[in-house]
Image (cartoon, rainbow over all chains, first blue to last red; front, top):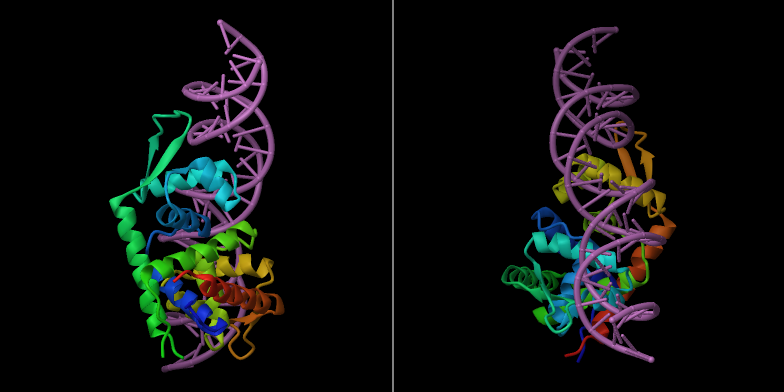
Length: 116
Length: 116
DNA sequence: GTGGACTGAAACGGAAGCGAAACAATTTGC
DNA sequence: GCAAATTGTTTCGCTTCCGTTTCAGTCCAC
């Protein structure tokens, strides 16, 4: 069984979630940054700069910069791969997990409030 | 009857939609810009700069700049209010309606593909 | 009609994003 | 051992966004 919704409901859901994020002064992540963050937290590790760049079809500097920003927000952390020291492994953080969790709960709540 | 989903499904849905947007080089709107666009297309008109700023809890220049950007993308259009010439009325465009419609369809499609 | 209130836009300096290219550090292949 | 390939970062010039402040145009009360 899959999730079923009409386009008007989907758009309303998206709007409500975005509005709550904007209003609550949540970290103002770009679409790309959010996509990277969710990929790190939803897809199985390990995550590398190269892997994320390929997954999102963007250049590597885009990933590096996003990691700089989200690292400053403590949403993710970087660690050298000891087995292949060229690699950087991106790992989750407690703060990031909490943020993602709350974000997911927010979507569910807004979905539940949707008019028919 | 409301839309029911688990947080993990909600996050996966969000990720899939963002990934498709990023990968397809869709207009790279910020979270705020997207919130403004959806509000214009979902909430009943008329829409003014001041009204949108209040609805999103942001300053007026944020709205003005977002309208500049989205106007250049032809997603919205501006018109002086003839009854009160201080006001600017923001209106929908054919291109914008098409973009929003496709966006909604995309969400629905990703929701339908979600694993249980 | 004139002063004050209101609306949206513009100006300003600063922060952060972009793509492309160049860059060190490391591993691999021979 | 050493050139070639690979990885992530940095640099360059440019664009866009931010908040604050200032400005021009319009309306309204008196």
